[in-house]
Image (cartoon, rainbow, N blue to C red; front, side, top):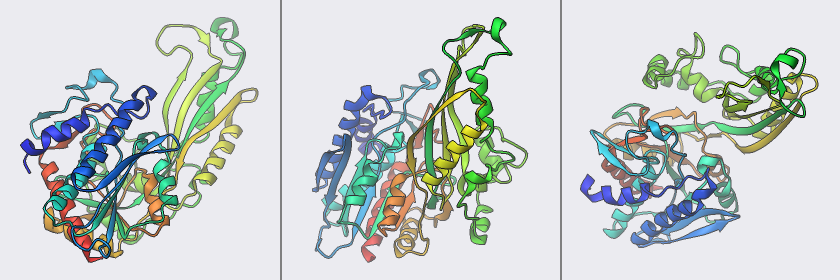
Length: 441
């Protein structure tokens, strides 16, 4: 399949502005889910967009070409919602108007995750239409992954059908030509904080130094939970399991941490951040302020603000318990808050971390499939990201191949998101090989 074969079809999917974080785009999220269903039906399968407690799920299946009753079942997951595109002025082309420039296809969602979900859909359709699909391929896709939703997790918890293996294309290669399978994902707890310190904003000349300032109070409170030398305080590290010697050896084969940071034009948080890059981003919890607002951050206005808001997330290391860490986080915040300040802590979403057994037959067959289709055996590495579905699949005993074809320079969640044009064909070929090899389960 060449770009001429897939460009128009994939572009149609990418043009749908399925931004789940913006309620105004709810119709577009539904449209993206219907688009997924249509491709499953084109493959000869059945698919419907279900309303799962207010959230859309695209649920369908393409049956094996021969003897489907005895063929293994592979469950494929992807999400059809995308991140907001702002700041728009930093895009070199319109975010929802796909454009090929040089080696890359640019568009919001092309790497995370519409473009990668398309690889699985196109591969299943190609094999099915040729009468060569050797496994039953179930699709269970959601439209709220970017907002930390749980519809797909709840669906899988209630699902009695199951599968022999699962496949998720929502990750990245280590470098061009160097694929990877993720054998662990971090969890997530996400909070909204509101700090209140009075009835109204005050004149900073008349009251500064005497009255509580909500901005100052929130900063002081957050200082009690932020990392020191790359480590969170011990209560937020409960349950952390150190990496094995094999994992440490594997990390030494990856690009140096200094290189990974430099490639993203990121500045190390401290002197050991580069040396400990993979430890900190995959095997340790990490706390980040994702947004903060108080007073008048743009206009020159000399006030003591009486309200400050922040969004704060903690990425959880494998084996940590989201509920326990959420409790410890709130306790530490309240201990750090200044006397007289009123703090509200709201848990917006959470997801557990997960581990995938690397010796599972499905993983080993997947390695063989990639070696055949891509020409390189994937490295087994942890992921610093969060996919709530992985823990749900692990709870069901379904081994999951988590991989993908974006690169570290894909600008995921940033302007100018991109995917290498050549990796569309390569990803479809790898997905075909996976379905073929997993027939051996």
